[in-house]
Length: 309
Image (cartoon, rainbow, N blue to C red):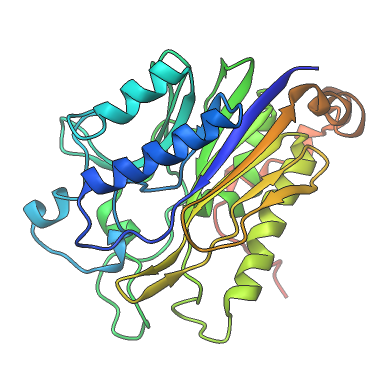
């Protein structure tokens, strides 16, 4: 048995006025609580240092860049990294990244128990739109503020297993899990900030959204025989509700832990990484059963095209 005790650290709302220093204090409290329950890895949400700022339309670079981190760790987050190293706990941390060249990404990093960054991921599947849309109940401007990720879906051997990452909307795309699955991934970590109501489909409320969220995580876990750790930012941020639904899903697609609140909340589970082996070797033995000669459309075509009438 290769047991990895993982903490899934949900955050309640972060208001626009809340400084990063206050958020880091909350992250450290969750980190220490997880360590107290035996965790050696903690998964934090997407954009874990700030409110979900893409809901606001901004034009000036200075206003936009104020939400981004130019380096990681930096002066504000260094206490979190130092404490994680002291405790011997690795972290998945999501944040808005501004590169030295001025490029902006929705990013997550993985650290090992020594506090070293061992993997970086930049969100590939950006939802939303670029310009202000008066017909939306609220804006979702990720395509305005971020570039699509340019690192693909890398995995790394760390913390005793094969670790991979994705962010929020990535979880809805089967290609996300499959690319990591083809690299033998055993733990997929993902942070998310998801509105409780669809901005273009008001009839789709939180229960429908939670159903699709669970479905995406469970199917990705089962079809690639991997653990999935999904950490939410939840609650009402400046009048905008986000659903919770933080989950830990086992390699059979079963939910083994789920959040019960929309506040700061910790889920902890001892994940046996050896449980990935049966699905990888038997049910979904990719080397024996995949027929790549028939999958060409997956990479040759982006949009769906029906056959001619």
